[in-house]
Length: 247
Image 1 (cartoon, helix red, strand yellow):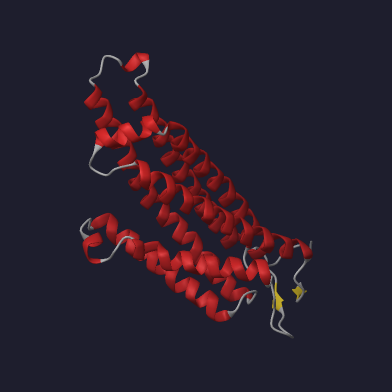
Image 2 (tube, one colour):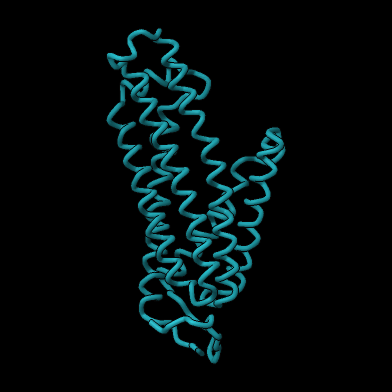
């Protein structure tokens, strides 16, 4: 089947994907820098526990923000699958599953936040433990979140690499932007894998370098989808995979 037109469902999905990413980006930045960084003090379990107890509602608001972030990513991955499946239904599905793994890791991180609140709140069934031990356990739960983050980041960057390749193949967005996506996403995959093996790698390459370039690509792509939508070069035609039924 030859198809040169972009159907209406793809255009709606493009708006949804762009808006979902931009909104979830604002949420996660607000939560991480406005709440987590304000309340969680690295290497100081006692102060962290005091901050959580003194601002428990704010801390719980951060948990709600993390959950909303996960909801937004699920919307985004569904929309991207709708957009990119004409290029390769198998690769689009694989990218969606890898991004879903990223969401699951983020949800595990969120569960650790609940654990931290429970430990510092002094529930009745924890009264047999010393306060400083509970604070240390809470701090351990909070620090363990980063391990889950970097495991999830591998799957998230693999998904981004596949999507960038499909963007490049589709020509729905500018070719240069798709190429930037392939490069930045592949860089994140490589950095994450190296970091797993060599923990001191973060002394050489700042951890922000892992995913910030990929994040900038995602922001640029999302803005393009929201304001420009999907566009094909004039006269371009592509052949859909066998068995694909027009929507």
